[in-house]
Image 1 (tube, rainbow over the protein chains, first blue to last red):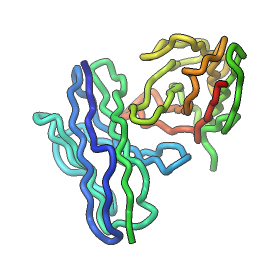
Image 2: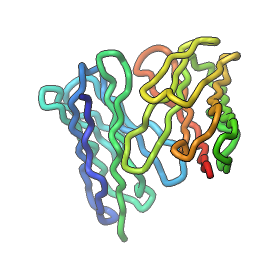
Image 3: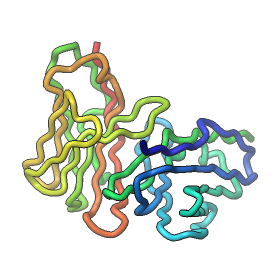
Image 4: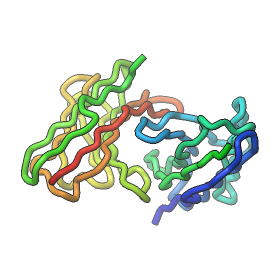
Amino acid sequence: GQNIDQPTEMTATEGAIVQINCTYQTSGFNGLFWYQQHAGEAPTFLSYNVLDGLEEKGRFSSFLSRSKGYSYLLLKELQMKDSASYLCAVKDSNYQLIWGAGTKLIIKP
Amino acid sequence: DVKVTQSSRYLVKRTGEKVFLECVQDMDHENMFWYRQDPGLGLRLIYFSYDVKMKEKGDIPEGYSVSREKKERFSLILESASTNQTSMYLCASSFNSGANVLTFGAGSRLTVL
């Protein structure tokens, strides 16, 4: 079966750095997405990786290793507004998205 | 600046009622999707559409149907609501090219009593 694993919840301190991991086993790979979802709101797109390596976008970076079936989202200089759930999703060989259950990130002052 | 609009944020229905969830996007996207989101689970695809009057079953289509009469509108229909359909329903849309990044609506929280 197809599976996306990510931690259920993480806690970090304002101003710090946090890494949210995502591992996947899917039938084929055509890209990996990270979305952010604040409580009660729509998920919004953060990043897309299709090749190995690190993609940096401001305070957020996303890393992919296809050989290891692994990605992480790195958030730097954490702010209270970063408290949200972070969803990892992989596009499989049929170009369908397989979603992880999401990681709830709690930021403490 | 609203791009994907779901007509109802909160609905409470009784078992057996017919329920319509409406979704409209203003970005001229070809693709539209209906997902449900439940605690502890990843988003699950109910139905999707790549074009007007076209629909494809997703992973959990049982108990649902959809309608896409116009490019901008994708409706989800629960013919006879059941308590196990209590959930958050998310509509999304995307272009049919490139990374197909999804733009989501704010969601419709349905409670079936």
